[in-house]
Length: 157
Image 1 (tube, rainbow, N blue to C red):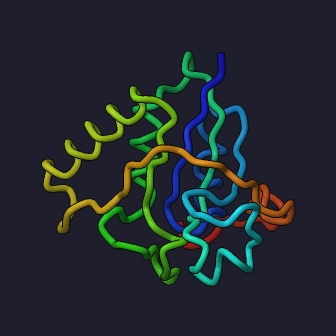
Image 2 (cartoon, rainbow, N blue to C red; image 1 turned 120 degrees about the vertical axis):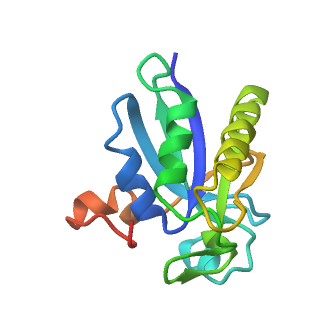
């Protein structure tokens, strides 16, 4: 049975490029979540007024790749210590967040985050939000698989 994981780590193009290459990931969808505007457009999210983050929804086979491994990939591929910023992208729509779909995902996310924080790997504390998953709105079609369509990894990742 397939499971869902949802992450925000800056510009969703680059995040999708990373997760799409992981064995066990069956599909990826970029979109918007965590805000209070129904069916927002990219232009609305870019204003920073919707509360939504650019995010990726990952459908995966837990018999091939575990949630803990997906979390490790998530934290390895962005800077989780910069609030509302990834590289040149600034605003709450670029925040670092784990949107959990179950109590087990929440437990594992907090455990991995706390372990990384205690490891001294980062010069500053991890600011990644760990919050319940809410409605996920797929981004416009031209954003889906952007890195493949345009031959790029995307957004500095």
